[in-house]
Length: 232
Length: 292
Image (tube, rainbow over all chains, first blue to last red; front, side, top):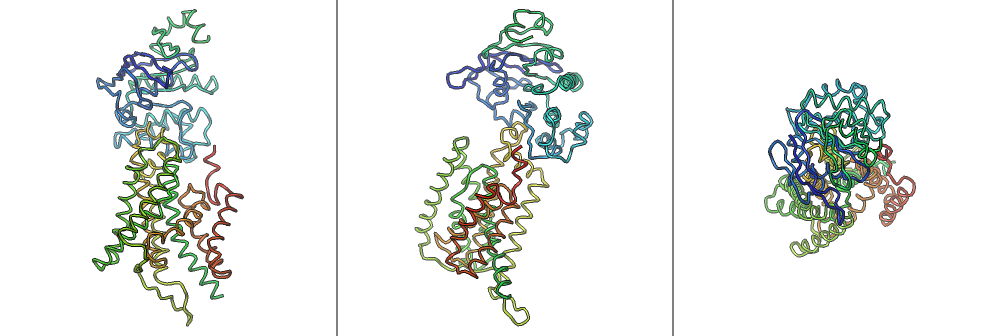
């Protein structure tokens, strides 16, 4: 569904993403792991065009989308849930959700579907998003991305700052979304253990380069990788 | 007592014009975080265009409509041609550009239409209402001014609060990057914001022109009052801009009526300084929510 080939991004003299290749098939979760500054966020930002790619290609459903504008990439069905959750605090929960489906027009998911998935949001429809807790913001952010019925979901550190119970809940939700909707999920995480628990494939980045691309159980079993890059 | 009523009513009428100018400034500030110093010159140009249409066709309403439409186009063109290239650069760049545009437009207007102010027709009678034998200063044209500004404010509020387009415009203003990630065509929303702002400005121009006469620099004081009104309202909130405009209009009307009109510019500046010292976020702003 989503293929990345030799993607390179440079900020000044720093190569944040350096020749990264990966693949996210339909209905699967690919976890991208690594320490702070490994290039994980830059990778996602390059895929959706927020920063320009220096070299390489991003191919979505057979189409090269590398040079398209952010809005056009999103409008093809690539949803990106940014780090720090990205809910618009000034808008209400309902407005945030609605915004996510507008580009789809009539093809958007009904908001009720999202409220069913996240009942906590249902109770808070009319409140400004600034009143939500961290976990609720994460749910709103994911729910909002789902409003446009995307085919690819890019998630940037959904576990950041959340209690372990909530992290487990969110991870379970992500797995379910991949399985039931056939979403191709690219999950960027520092929390390697919980990401690998739901992933079909694990990729480790270091200084912008892919240092491992393996089955999750192989990664978890590799003592050297775990100590050097994953911190568990 | 009659004097008080007179001053209050005429204050509301000039306040409505300040409100329209304040709306123009606030819409652009919200969308792109730029104070548009060219606003006064832009509405001067659209009012000159209206004047030309009125004198050649004899129809006030045609001129009125042309002013609003040319404002719409003008605002969009300025955003696309002038502001877009410096988007993402420090906001000061764009502010300097608007200052340059101001100078350019005033010079062009002087070259085309000369610098002697000319009269501009009013939509309705300028004779005050007769109430129980006394003639008020408030005229049918003032009624029109107040109603049309309120109508524009209500339409804008409905656009922002009740339509998908307004939701996208708000999202683009609050969080442009997140909005783009949700498929909002943020560039178009900015252009539309500038266009709508210029319409509000053009409206203020044709409404106030009968009182100030029409010349390249006639509208500079209105822009200053509009700016003070916008700051009163919090610079960020369209309803705040309207309330700020009306409040300022009435306050300055009292100053002018009871203390003398020469004190008006000074009073406007004093109000500006006091508001900035006591409540820098404006009297009606929703800043508490924004800061979270």
